[in-house]
Amino acid sequence: MTTPDHKRAPVEIEPDLVFGLRPGVGVVAEGVGGRARVEEVLRRHHFRPHPVLGVYVLPSGAPYNRVLRAVTGAARALRDAGLPVTADPLLLVPRPSRSLLGWRHGRRFRPSR
Image 1 (cartoon, rainbow, N blue to C red):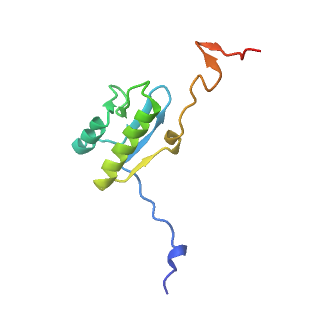
Image 2: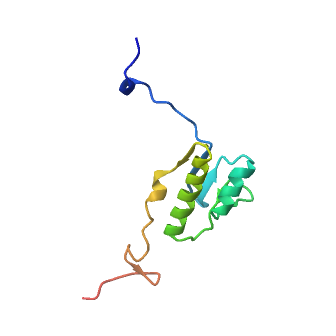
Image 3: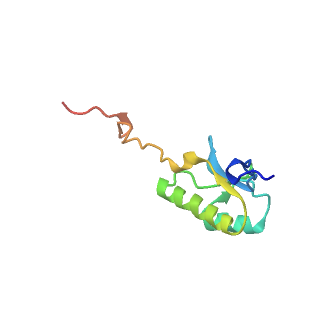
């Protein structure tokens, strides 16, 4: 007797590459492992190797839309090549800018009365 499709245990696949945020470093791609094709795709999407950590990083200070395009573009290209890829969902949430937090010119903004 077979189990209905909706009751099957999910198949767990370990991703070959993970995109995420690393404190003090920024947006990283981990799990490259010296594969030339993966490195080529990451470089094409503006990731660069970190000299110490063994990960690929995006330039710090990149605007949110550029970060999002880099991660989604690289992930799509690698997925289309048959590699399991995953990304931290927090990468899809833009960080609040200082102006949104009430900061202006490095000082707390106080609305005029």
